Structures are given as C-alpha cells and as structure tokens.
Image 1 (tube, rainbow, N blue to C red):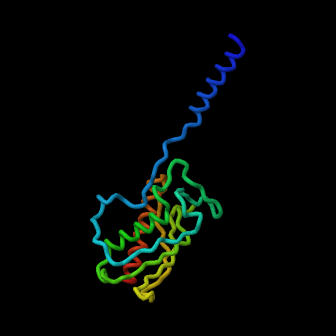
Image 2: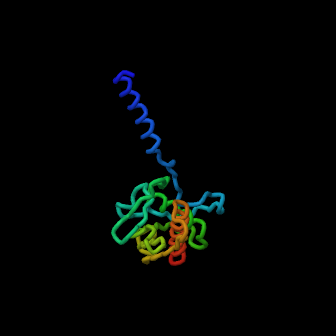
Image 3: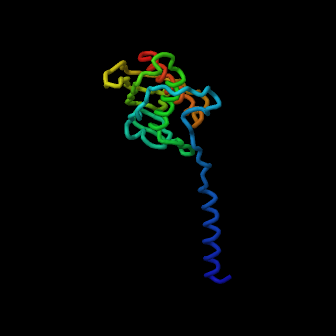
Length: 182
C-alpha cells in the first residue's frame, strides 16, 4: 500500500474511532413544572407574578448542584427547557392561580428575589427568597423571607429527581405567599 493511501486510511479510521468515543448521551430538556394533566386548570386571578429575580449564576439553562460550599457542578446530560427565572415565574403564577381562594380580584403584584436555589451537598434543595405583594398603588400588602428545604432521594440525584424537588419548593413558596397575602 502506498504511504499516501496508508496515511489516508489511518486518518479515516482514527476519525471514526474518535467520533465513537466522544459521543455523549442525548441532552434532556427538563421542565420545572409537571404537565398540566397532573393538576386542574387554574382560573386566572388578577395577581401578577413579576419576573423572578435570581443571581446571575442561576439565570441560565444549566441544571446545577452545589457539590461543596464553593463549587457548583452542572449536569452534563440535561438542561432546563427554559431559563430558570422564567420557569420559576411561570410555576409561581400557576400555583398562586390554583391555590388562591380569596382576593382573586385584587390587582396584586408579586415580587420575588431568590438568593439561593439549588441542590445542596446535604441532600436537599434549598430555596431562599424574599418576596412582597403590592397593590395597585404600590403599597405593600405582605412581605416575608422564605427558606424552603426539600429533600432529594439518597439513591439518585438525576435531572428528574432534582426537577421534582425544585418544583415542590417553588410550589411551597407560592403557598406561603398566598397564605400571607391571600
């Protein structure tokens, strides 16, 4: 075999071999909220959840977990289907609309500022947020700080279990807001 053909054959074989070694599992797109089929359709209220504010490191598509006090690690095979602040805002609105019994016709705005929202090395999702509800005249109706801890299963910490725990934490935050202001 001529040296040029041998070199070309080697390049083709090496490319195919390296391509096979570097294949990653398919990327999963993860939703923060369960499908609408798992809950009743909510009648919209006059409450408006403003876009949730989060630290910049959370304002992206990466699903991140804190692996020690100073290190965040992203899941390599999964990403949020929408930016995390958008997903949290949507789930808060849905949950408030579902749970709100009184004051549905009040023109309230809900402002949430999240400080921490990720799985911790302790095996819990921690959601720390300050929030306030204001009326149409921008007067504060209710405000509070919330610290919500939702356990993760000890056996698996994959995208599904993380999303489920984070979803539960957001829904708990919405219930606290409704309990204090609604």
